[in-house]
Length: 71
Image 1 (tube, rainbow, N blue to C red):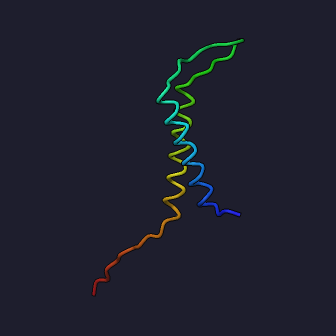
Image 2 (tube, rainbow, N blue to C red):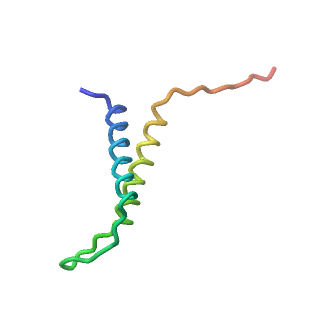
Image 3 (tube, helix red, strand yellow):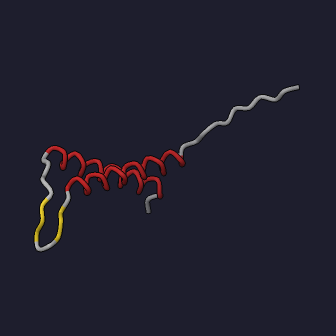
């Protein structure tokens, strides 16, 4: 079974592929049977997903804290 980090990387990769496809072939917002299909809202949601993935992945990276004592 893959780790959480691998799953988040996969989600990010898949979402970026969808974004690339949508921006290569943009579509207009339209209304059908009383429902709105907003491609701009969908794209914004996908971008928010990528941002979420980046925040989660950044939290998993090692970090270093430097401090200096005063005598």
